[in-house]
Every structure is written in C-alpha cells, then in structure tokens.
Length: 491
View: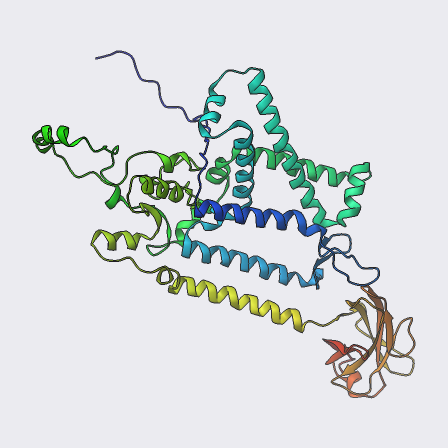
C-alpha cells in the first residue's frame, strides 16, 4: 500500500476554452437571421425619426430622462403612467415562460443578448484565426510575433464592436445625432462617457472571454427553467435508443476478404452498432462545450447547432437524419415502444402554454385599451388641511385646494373647471379670471383653487361633503375628473 496520499481536489477548476467549429444547416441559418435582425434593430432604432410637431423631439424611440417621458413612435408615456412599463415587463416574463414551456431555452439559444454578441465575437475570431483546429493550435502555441499580431487584430475588432454597442445604448436616452456630435468633439456629459466605457468593457469581456461562463454561472434562468418545462416540452435531445451502442463506422470489406472472415465475425459478434459513429461533431460545434448525448444539462441553451452537425454526418454515412433533434421526453418513450411521436402542434397547444398565452394576450389587450382610453389631460387636486376651512366675514366657508393640471397635448389648451355633485359652490382659481386656465403644451400648471359655500347652506353645516371637480377642453373633447371633499363647520 502506497504511503503517498492523494492531494484533495481543488475548489476551483481553471476554465477550459471552447472553440466551436463552423457548421452549416437550417438552425445555423436561423441563428444568422435572428442575429442580423436583432443587431439591426438595436443599432438602427435610435436613428429613426418621427415628427411630433414643433418643440418636440423627433427621435422615434427616446427615453427622455430630462423631461421624464418615454417616446415610442406615436406613443408617449408620462411618469405617472408607469403601469404601461410594468405591464410590458410582465408580458416579457410571461412570454419567456410561454416559449420555454413550448420550446425549451429557445430564447437563450437565439435572442439573448449574451448569445447574440458571443456569436458575433466568435464569427470575428473564426474570420481572423481560422476554424476550430487552427484556433486550438494558436491557443496552445507559445507567444510569438504571429500570435501577438492575430490576437491584437482580433481584440481590436472586438473592442470596436463593444464600443459601438455601448454607444448605441446611450443614444436611446438623448437625441442621437446631437449626442454623437458632442461625443466626437468632447462636449458630451461625463455620464455619457462613463456609461459608454462601462458597457464597452462588459461587452468586450462577456462576449469575448467569459462567453459560456455568463450563461452557466451568472444567469439565473438555467436554474429556474425546469419549473417551466415538462415531459411534453420540445427541446434538443439525442435519440439514445437509435444511436447506442455507438462506435466508429466500419467500412465494408472486399467480398473475398468478407468470405474469409465470416466465421470469425460470427464468433465475435456483439450487439448491433447504433447510428452514432462517435465522430464528436455535435460536441465540436457546441458553444457551451457539452455533449448532448449525455442527456439534458443545465448548460444547454437549445441553439440546435448539434442538430445541424449530426444531420450532416448522417447524410454522409447514409443514415436517416434526426439522431439529434427537437423532441420531447414523451416522444422518446413513445419511439422506444415503436409508436409515432406526437405532432409539433400537440406539444405546443397544451394547457400550460394556452394558459401562458391567455395571460400574455390578456395583459396586452388591457394595455392597448388603456392606451387608447387615456385622456390628454391629467388632474390632481389635494385639499389644504391646515386649516381645513376658513370662515369668511359674512359667514361663508371657504376651502383651499392645491391644483395640478397637466396638458399632455403638443399645443396650448384652455381648460374649463367646474364642480359637479353639489350646487351653490363658488369656484375661483388664483391668478386666473373666471373658471378657466390656459396651460402650455406639455406643461403642468400648479395653482390654488378656492371653493366657497354661502352662509347658511347645507355645505357649511355638514362636516364634509363629497364633490367632483371636472376639467374639460372644448377644443379637443379632452376631460378629466377627480373626487374630493368640501369641509364645513359640522354643526
């Protein structure tokens, strides 16, 4: 027995770099298409223009922090309408649940920003350093002038992409052409430069170096996706019943040699070889570096590149495609028993997915209805409580209110203010003549409003009376109302 004791395993294992091999196929083409669309939307959107009239920003999509508004083409969201943003976030969450329940981690494999930019960085890496084998050799070789030149070239292109990414993000928060001019001339606010630097650095590190580590260790979604999936969820899987036992493909021997070795082969005959020839093509193209033949794994992002690689090999060796495919656990059970798997729509149209879609679409309909039903004017009235009321010299009772009237139109409007629910109240607005006020476009008027009840009326004798203040704009049929109370002596 050896006296040497094995050293305990370390708590940290160094990262093994992954060099995905180039692959062609329908899913790879789909990923290229999605990457092109998403990157085009991200980079181009801040430069789209939308005419909103004079003195209004003409950027189609703009988060106007200075004026506390969000513009999305013809839609304008004000700070007090944050429920629209909350509704969109809920819809995004339900949409993620819906797609995961139906198709597994399809979001992670195709549209997640980490996946999209990592794909782009790998494309640059392959273009500069070559395909998988060349990149592995370059990684293992000692540093020399050639390696340094290739790495510096690659890192420079990565840095340009990261800089464009950080720059595109800040363009969403102010006028893009003006900000670009200020950035180039050095006149932009320091916050803009700091934000660009942070986003550039994180994009460069996450897309170029961390890559799959972000998905495995930083992203929480792999750890909760199991709650969204069941045995009928379509996901990338390996048909083990068809591929095992795996082994290298045996070439057919000449007929004379085959006759001489018939007895030997019969004597040494083992289980029939499966379709998998253990070529490792599915592993070599995987951006996460996993072997899908080991079953479902936390690291799998359902990008389906292993399907393209395996289908290509199956065609070359004359075997049916689909050894690795989109399938559900229930399909595997059925296929092992010799039955046909369920159709794709049968997997998608299930109670769980229907419930998610119903909730998702219901919230969307409510948001659209609320968007079209909202008024072009907002009214906020707060009674002044110190004192609750003032007794005038003639015995009348006067209440004071803080009035805030927001004109959400892009033109000057004149609003008439009236009291509903009771009669006999005299209405006066501080600084205005009569019961109407003028509010500039996209402005908020703050003023004091006085309501006076004559002496001896029911309003003066009651402790409090519910009233309604109504604001109308005859020119645009815009109106708003608010419930409040009128305080009396309570005799």
